[in-house]
Amino acid sequence: MFASKRDLMLAIARRPRLAALYAKVESTRGDSFRPDWRITDLIEASRQPTAPDPGIVLPDDDPDMDLLARQVRHALQKPPRKAVDLAARPPSGPTCGGCTAGTTAP
Image (cartoon, rainbow, N blue to C red):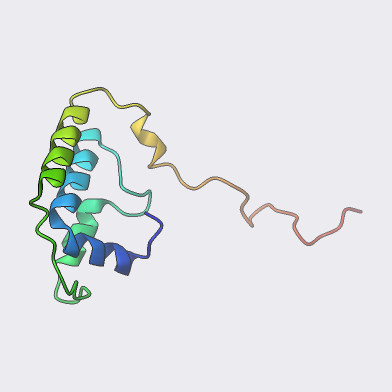
């Protein structure tokens, strides 16, 4: 989540089944992966010819991945634990539009 767009596209291309689980959560909950990027958009970008070459692609067909997929499907049947609009909010914190940083009071 804290990675660059390029690194996220590499991770998505290397672990497509895991990325699909993220997309399932995003679409079911109406939430976004990050306020500035939807996982579905990153998946699409990772499939473009201009996307970075992932090198290897992990099949994600082991029992651990199967268990994770079942857990995600089960969790999505329950109500969300947080309001889904939280991820869509703009970043909070001071902005330069009204700050007085670097100035002295009269």
